[in-house]
Image 1 (tube, rainbow, N blue to C red):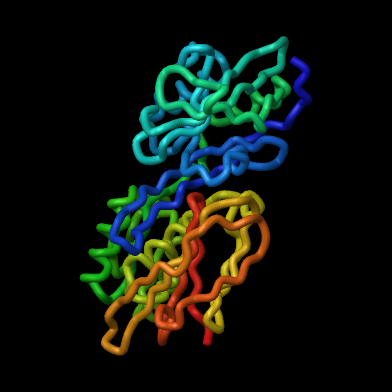
Image 2 (tube, helix red, strand yellow; image 1 turned 180 degrees about the vertical axis):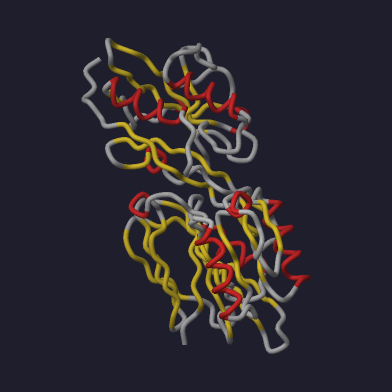
Length: 340
């Protein structure tokens, strides 16, 4: 095979979970993505909602088996030496569809070829092949080093647990329930004083309600700093559960900024400014509070955007008064208050 060499690497990624405007839930998944020639391989597959088999929430034995499989230290899971590269983020069932590829070894090189969309044990390359992707030839040492690093204990593994601090207990309970539904652990507290450092290290983010005062916030930050824990802090924009979930999802995103699809969101003067780095589906949802503090949600845009910056007009009724815009792709979420 005469495929030119491509670089191989790995990077943290996520499938953004969330509470959608129609009431549906989307499960949060942290995973490791394949970086080919400096770009996530997933971005070459249009707007595919999928995760690699190297997900952080699978049991350690299964995760290790997946790594060993990609290193060709175990038999291929599908006929024809085919391996799952990306699968369904909800259930990982092949029947939902998966991107597969043949993985071969020539000398010291590893080769990924014949990419296809597959829904049963056999792939139809003529009908469902990704003809513009691959083959990729990876140098053996680089390939083994990248995948082998996943077999070591990772002190920077995702901490999918959030600490919620606020005055409105009922709201916090609803927020915690929503986060748990999408796969993110959540605890509620008023004071972290006396909490052991080992327990503080299990959190990836702290979310403050709007009523939490400056002194209380400072005390919480000191407690985490004294414990040597680096967490993301979220200042809740409004008592709207889907909005707060989106803020927390953004805070938990560990993927490198330069390898994200959705990189910019501004909201002002009845418009949303959005920037994406590869073709993808973008959904914009506007949330607002009326004078009686009731929540209103409006889907204001849902479509495929090409790479670049885009200006999207928003329905004036959707962003009336105190309002906020959530931009969502399969891999990331951004939130902005509507500027006046």
